[in-house]
Image (cartoon, rainbow, N blue to C red; front, side, top):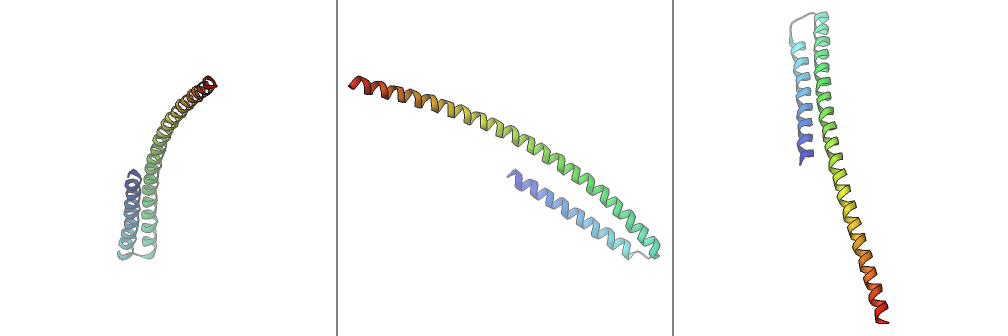
Length: 108
């Protein structure tokens, strides 16, 4: 469930970025300016959008690192629990085998 929510947030972020780019380009191209001024505006807007995208990427990367860290902790705890269960089952199996051997020897 968390993965779907994270994926949805990423998709929304990408949609917002694409919308911002499209809006900025449309606004600059529709403005009555010279070609040089239009190119300067496009360059400025592209820089702003790039900076914003880099910030968003850093935020997403930090969230991903946090989720990965949490997953590692959960996996580590699960591995410990499995190992304890395996050790317990092995001990029970050894005890059952010893009991069966003892019962077999006593019947002879």
